[in-house]
Amino acid sequence: MANVSVYNIEGKKVDILELNDSVFGVEINQHLVHMAVVSQLANKRQGTQSAKTRAEVSGGGRKPWRQKGTGHARQGSIRAPQWRHGGIALGPKPRSYRFTVNKKLKRLAMKSALSTKVLDSNMIVLDSIKVEEFKTKAVIDMLKAIDAYGQKALIVMPESDIKVIKSASNIPGVKTALVNTINVYDILNYDKFIVVKDAVAKIEEVYA
Image 1 (cartoon, rainbow, N blue to C red):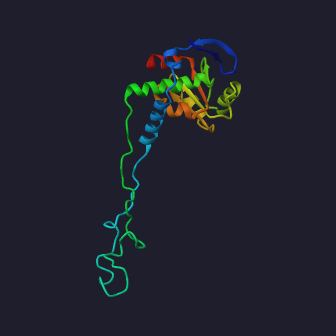
Image 2: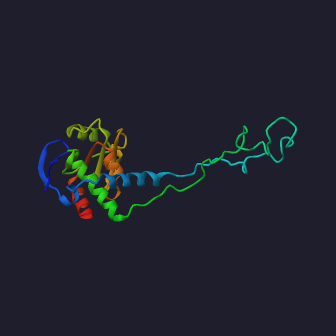
Image 3: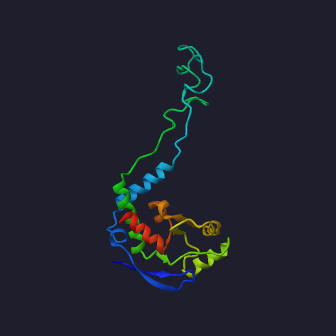
């Protein structure tokens, strides 16, 4: 099993944590990770884009000129696609971009993402995260102590702590999350995966 060091918010090593290999030490499946990320990003799309067809633009109720004898190419409407202000041929219409990945594959993709962070030494485990007041500087000092300041960091907590959430919200590139809200895209999108020790236990409980 893989072992990771556990630090306090001052950046001092206080313990060693043994990780469950069935969650943090699986063989990385790039294809499943890609599927999970594409699915998540696609499901965020609103799909509300729309262009008017020739049937939807105004005007063009009659032929602009007679069929023959004018020297012009024959035209049926001034709102055909080739005309200025005409309708759009084959333009976008509202649609759903959603596609689903089954639960088993989602779990494997999540395990692959978590294992990637451990393999790349980008997973930092803290014994706890506590701030006494709503203060951004407290979180910044913690990030500096663990050499994560200035990098994109995802902080995962076992339970909601409004003081930590509010204090971290003003720091560019830093996001807080709970165990039940983490996803493959966020884990891979952030450079550092900072997780509280109790949150690690919950992750292993959910995905083991």
